[in-house]
Length: 115
Image (cartoon, rainbow, N blue to C red; front, top):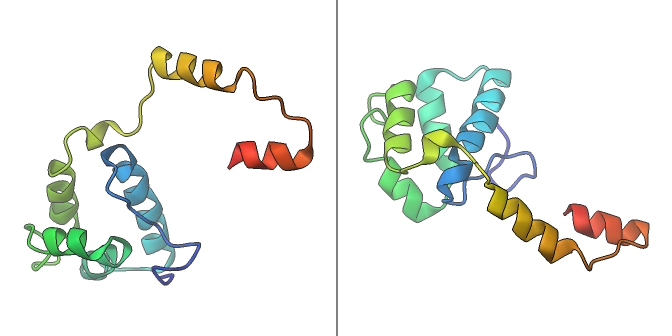
């Protein structure tokens, strides 16, 4: 598995709406590397900060190396995480208003916009 500081490492920053994507990235990597459920439990907590790791390792499933139970217990700690990332029409309108006066005149500006 990639080092936690690697650009290829999954990273969860604590935002509930990004938790499902974090799990998807982690599970894809875990599958590529052939991790067992026990390995997944041990490796998953490497990709969060220390305070979050301390909270997660006390959840049911971690010590018994039951990844599915562990994952569900993590999801249960973040209300709304099971819905993933959702946006409203209001969010879209806000983006349109914010970007309406920002002309993109060069390739550099385009790349800055995309980041």
